Image (cartoon, rainbow over all chains, first blue to last red):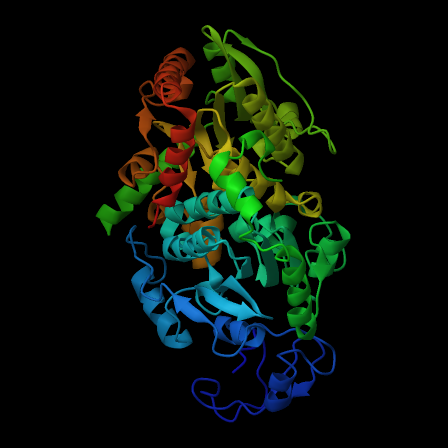
Amino acid sequence: MFRPKTRYVALPSPRAGVGEEVDRLTCPKCDTSLEPARLTAALGVCYRCGYHFRLRAPERVAMLVEPGSFREEDQAIVAKDVLGFKDSQPYTKRIEQSRAATGANEAVIWGEALLAGHRLVIVCLDFAFMGGSMGAATGEKITNGIERALQSRLPLLIISASGGARMQEGMLSLMQLAKTSAALGRLNAAGVPYLSLLTDPTMGGVTASFASLGDVIIAEPGAMIGFAGARVIQQATYETLPEGFQTAEFLWQHGMVDLVVPRPELPAVLRQLLDLYARNGVAGDFALQRQTETPAPASVTPR
Amino acid sequence: MSDNGSVAAATWEQVELARHPDRPYALDYIHAIFGDFFELHGDRVFGDDHAIIGGPAALDKQTVMVIAQQKGRTTAERAMRNFGMANPEGYRKALRLIRQAERFQFPIVAFVDTSGAFPGAGAEERGIAWAIADNLVALAQARVPIVTLVIGEGGSGGALGIGVGDRLLMMEHSIYSVAMPEACASILWRDIARKVEAADALKLTAADLKRLGLADEIVPEPPGGAHNDYGVATDAAGAALRRHLGTLEAIAIDRLVEERYQRYRKIGA
């Protein structure tokens, strides 16, 4: 169920993890061999040292929302190879392989769901699918989610896990930064709350667009979050990077996120935020009136 | 193979032209096109970033707000400009200028010329990604016309951070890419030497962007490139900017902002 990014140990067979049960895995942080059942019960958090394993998008959503309340949208939107991109293998083949390996159609899922009694729009990236990279289809689904939140005046939760823009779609990927940000600008101007949850890893163009635009930004402990990768920075500047550079805790110290929240506490924290931010009703008459009567002057627009 | 190879080589030639050290930089265009330019300094938060410059400038009978990425010509100036790679302060200064442009109803003219935002520890500590994202929103919503001209390199989010607007113009030998070919080669091929193939695969030339429907117009350069005759290049750029600003200013502002939203909304839809 969990796909640890690093070492499996004592694999029952070379193909363990591909359809077969892996009976032991090792925490990449404390090197403890973990029992899958216990790890699952601990929500993918190492019960010895607190390391947060990466989650697949459906697992993540299931962990947060009321059972059976998530209705996935836009499953049919899939990546297209507009550029005819080929590196060591064609992009079309990479997409196929990612689909086969992950069982997912794209690097993001979204839909409406209930969380602690609040109806909301939830958008969740999936790092297992091509590193959660944002191509045109990814950006389209995210934007559709944002626009649904705007049209239905539902609070928005986006859970990020991404290496950044998807290189294989070139400039069409880069423009998704502008597209998603423009949509969030409208959501912001309309007074609909957006909660952004940053998980391991959130990097590059995703951090430089929707991920950092939350009204409230929460990060999981130990998550790597940043724009340029540490290796790139070291190559460019020969700088010695400080201890814990680009971790969630580092970002919190620098004022970039509101809170670092351990995974088991996420439901309670999100409930508290939804209760507070949606207390007066996101679809409140005042907000609705203000939006229809006076288009918000841009000089007082967001942030 | 030889066909693919020669196509890739031609693409690489464009990359090298876009980075040519004698190419006109933003200030060369600014001084040639605008009658007056008053550079403003500082982001009012932390510092002044010389990789992004800007301020009000006179264009014929009106004032426009110029925001530009500036590379250095001499070794000392290159260091001062940080090779055109901006820190968060550059993007926050740009944000200050965007807000000012709205307040005084100055159309915005942005000159893009950067290999990317600066990959440095300090940039990360001070929220480079946050600064860029804020600008994407501010530019998407700014209630003034915005014309962007890529004059050399358009590098990734660092370029887009001042590059969202109503029109995207590209100098004939400029490039614009989701990642610089070297970075792409090192990530996808795990070999920086494959940069020529990467450049070709990325579809980053002005002609590519025009074909993809992302660039509105290619501004012609003198034979061999803009470095051969600054006057020809800056005249062509000035004429294109005036023409597009004229068109945009005739559009009611609500419609303009809506069209700008749709311009990005439809990419990849």
